[in-house]
Length: 239
Image 1 (cartoon, rainbow, N blue to C red):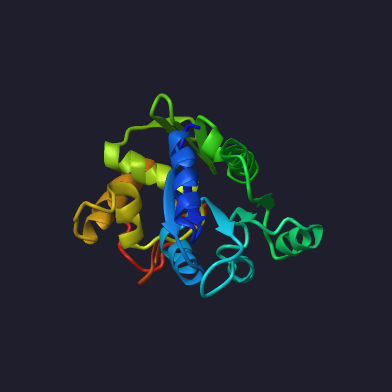
Image 2: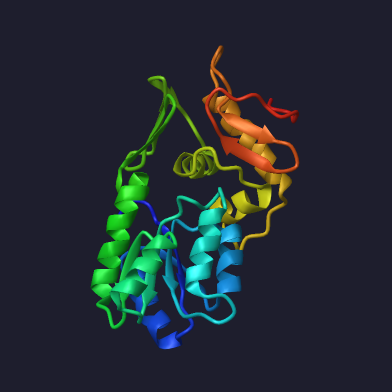
């Protein structure tokens, strides 16, 4: 897999969580963990994972309710969810799928099969994660050669601007706060002033937007930034 997809594993049995995490990380995935329903919902909001592996039987809120809650939220209606549970009856499988799960794996399970199901679901829902090229509007990014073009024109980016654009291309139209961009692009263990994001956004805009070309990066006042075509800035400096 070309890009490092982020998987949220929601499981309250530590032994199972350890095995699943090991197998996913061995295949190149980044894994986050939650042990109950409330923590799972908070981590989805804060971390924006690419896929959720969700146990049914959880403390506080059941996996079924977590799934339903995510499907009611417009920001997470399309988030891929694999239900992982010991409930193997056909009626339970139907309830799980009707609640919004994309796939249903029963315990005991083969870790390699679970990884294969994760890969298959990501291929269907996030094709960018299995491709060597990211595209949006008239922008193309080749991940293996680090080349970026807009309408066929070569774009020269510094390493940080490249990572920033890559993040936006992986998540087009989503609004990200400065803090979320710092975590995703710079890393969670590095302290940088949030306003540093604005500096690199300006550099990215300068490189990306040629004369007469619309600004692809939308500024959302008091919220952050998003990659959208034919956008108008929401009042902040775009120079």
